[in-house]
Each structure stands twice: as structure tokens, then as C-alpha cells.
Amino acid sequence: MPRLFTGIEIPAEIGLALSTYRGGLPGARWVDPESYHITLRFIGDVDERVADDVYSILGDSRWREPIPITIDRLGTFGGSKPRTVFAHTSDNGELADLQAEQERMMRQIGLPPEARKFTPHVTLARLKNVSPIHVADYMATRGHFQKLTFTASRFVLYSSKASVGGGPYIVEAAYPLS
View 1: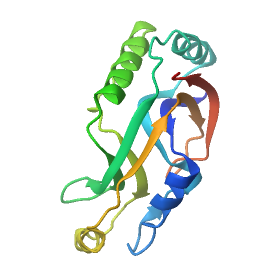
View 2 (view 1 turned 60 degrees about the vertical axis):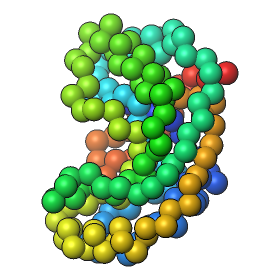
View 3 (view 1 turned 180 degrees about the vertical axis):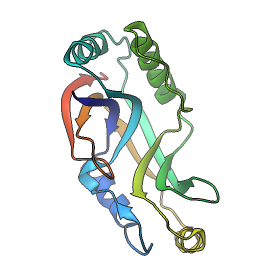
């Protein structure tokens, strides 16, 4: 049973720049730079029939324009119990529209709606039992963030094995945005 999701790949040079933020946070599980991506739609563990439906319907995507993406700052999810350090992407209507199209497609083939609000980001580290004070110190010492910009020319269908911290991710199919 594959675990699937769609996403935007992070170019190697952007991944290298993001990898400079690794370290300095005790207890963080840092994501390998080759696994950096922006999740568009988490699909989950599905059987082969559903996986085939996902693969097929994504090929019907009408979105065919490259998408400019700017990564503009660091952030955390989890509030007073931080669970993720991420690199935030600027408000981008095109990326949100692509995600909304994929959400409609997944619902069309019978998948339940995504429960979480779409917040485009690149996960840098996963946190478990990490002190909020350590997270605040980490964020404070990395206040100056050099914006990173690239153009996404495709989105991909990823698969992964259930694991702690995610990855490794395998590109099962690529869909051009040009």
C-alpha cells in the first residue's frame, strides 16, 4: 500500500542554501536536503487502484504555467509546543490555485477532503520534546533570512514509506507546468 502525496521539488541550489539552517537546535530531527519539497496535497496510504486513479487524474491537470516561488523566512508549527521548523513560502496565488485544483481532483476520485489549511512551506526539522526556549533561541539567532527564489516547472507525485521523520521520498510521476 503506497503512501502518496503531491509536491513541488526544491532545486539543489535552493536546498543547499536551506541546509545552512541545519543544526543548533538540540533534539531536532533534521530533514535531509534531498528530501526538501513543498507538499501540495497529502493523499495518504492507498491501495493500488486508488494510486492508479491518482496517477491518472493528475495527468488531467489543466494547470500549465510555471510558478514563481519565493522562500522568505523561517517559522514553526505547534505554538507553545513546537513540532516543526520550516521555511515559509511567500503568499502565492498560483501555488494556492494549483493546490486547490489538486484538492478538487482528489475529492473527485473519492478521497476525503484535506483537513489542514494549505500553508506552503519546506519542512527543515521535526521536533519532539524540544524545549520551546531552545526553539525561540534558534529562531532569534536566524532572524536575517536571505530570500530564495526559483520557478517550479513541474509538480510531482511522491511515494514514501511510513517512517519517523518522513523520507526517503520517491518521485513516482512528474507533471510539467509549461
